[in-house]
Length: 248
Length: 392
Image (cartoon, rainbow over all chains, first blue to last red; front, side, top):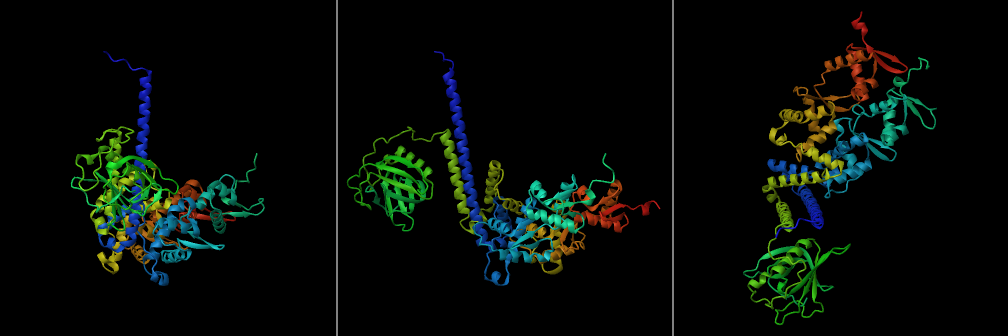
């Protein structure tokens, strides 16, 4: 007996089956992914524990040290996990503050694209704590200031400014910041900018705009116009349209 | 619960361990029992529960009296459970913890997860009835269970296809989990298995990146992981290179190898604090103090390395790539002024994508060498080509 050709029902069945396979496939993939996530967490907590507990042993063996670092790199774990012991607290000695210094600069470098190298000390503290991992002790503002003090020998590139009751950490010095250049670009068209204009168009922090403008006034690059309306505007002589040629 | 009997935890000669899971509590029907936290083992013949603290406390249940299994998914505050329906107790069973129970089922609560895998194997074993091939001596040898409610009617053999794939994936996951926990058991284990673990960590990270784009949302963690991956294999230390000048000059050499490229990438300059962070991340646990770093940097110019230390009047210290040769810079700046007719520092900054301070500095330097002339007005400082030098 010859086989009947497949009818519509068979085709429907087949596509239904295919859809089911597809569902199952993505279900398996999701499951696998969840497993991977779990393994990653497992790795992370293990590495964090080891970094805290076996620091000296890991340092002793050069080959293993590199391997440990590679693991930390791929999982994103901080290998520096000294705790603030008695001597660090009393005398500021030991590795704790050096490590903290490195972690502070790291947070500043990572965020500088977004905030132009200006970060509030509270945000800095939160980020440092988060990047130290779950074994971290609580880090106080005082710890941060102490650690930053240790970096002083490396020049004025990294500085702390008191603003109101809080602190602002500046990691990109005037020599290297492109903020001023960006302000100039903004002024290109009209010859002047306002602080709120910068804050709105560039989504900068208020403080960042204020610093950039203050610097340019101080350097004699910008003039302040107090009569521009509700807020001061800043004019750049080199960009002021040429009024000597009468407009037609 | 009255079907359980005490035992010593050893297996029969032809009995095999199938699956085990820690952190399991046993419920008599809906009621709690003293068997709260233990290791649940599934063998080809029995279900066994061993107390996690008192390892001599072991209770067991023959699989032959299991009449059905149900799953209870986990809730907000509840762990996932497996409900085991049992046939009436057989007379003459060895003594157990409970002599009489109102319930004909027990519940196993999986507080440390693992209930899915266990349920699957449990169901499988009940269906396979491997205990029938040879009835266990000593234990309860009740009549073989009547055919259990076989909803899916799965055959007791390894099935290929989707289930097979799932099972093999599962086995693989389990193996990996075991490997990780074994390797991290203590430091020596980890050292032995380090290479394997490095590869595993990389595989996991790549797979997660494929799926999610990145291992984490946190910008700092991403950046850290990037910095750490630039590791130095043999950092210069006082132990390896001795004290004094030799140490510092070796250190300076290593720094220059490590940093020349990143410095050029970031526009030819990098503050010493950024350098400090980068170097120490690359060195991993072999930290360098700020003082040592500064000494090494001071030696760079003397050693004719491709980068050198430079301190601005403002007190900002940077490492600068030597490719920024002073004379070339002066010629370049003068040419620029010539081409544009005249330039202020802010205009030059925009043309070169440089900071305003550096642009001004370049112009002043060019002025000093006679490349440009200043026009200082109330509108600011403007620079013109030095015609005094070229046209008179």
